[in-house]
Amino acid sequence: MKVVFYSLLFVLISKAALAQTYDPVKLFDMGSCAEVITYGTISKLDDKYYYLDCIINKGKISTLKIQKYIGRSGSFRYTKYETGQKLFVFLKKVNGEYQLYSTGIESEIPVIHDSLVIDMNCFLPKTAESLAPKGYTAEYRKIQTFTVGNKTVFGLRFSPKYLYESITAFNNCYQVILKRPNTFPSFFCFNFFNRLTRERTDMSKRKSKLMKLMFMDMEEAQLKNCK
Image (cartoon, rainbow, N blue to C red; front, side, top):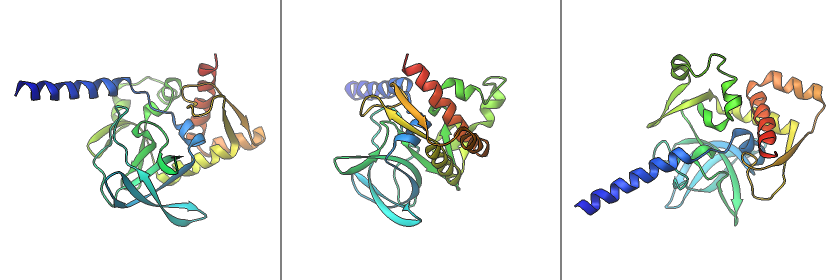
């Protein structure tokens, strides 16, 4: 009995430690470097995969077979996988199979009642704090904390359509170039360049506050990671 108790205690402590040390990939990184960005509904499940009915090209519905997330990083799903769940996903292809872009669950965002929540940790501190001039007061935390399944998330809430359109606008303006293959711009040095004129880029930022936040994060990450 003691062995079972201490084994369970070790698992719980290990999970807590992982959750404290895991640093999520930032939204600008997922938005600019994921191979597929889409949202849709789980139509089927098996042991290792789920099947997402989603829009990929020109409004056409496709079904993607995606590896399930198993929580290795220390971040955890809001609930178990079930058919009918709606998700916004950032994907990469590895050995011909789709899996989440990052090692954490931030690449798989639940959509509930046509809204989703981007964890505040998916922005660098300077960017996130710019949204709260008075700091992270108790009132601000209360306003920006949402219940997502069995989790509470401190973050920003949007519709999936707005998130998708903001990411599309961001990618129309900027291209991120990795200095080392298979690295994350969130944590490693990278370059980026502007695809459009400054006037057109500024116009896009005025239309989408989220795109502006992603740009701020990208600039800050480059300064921090390329010292």
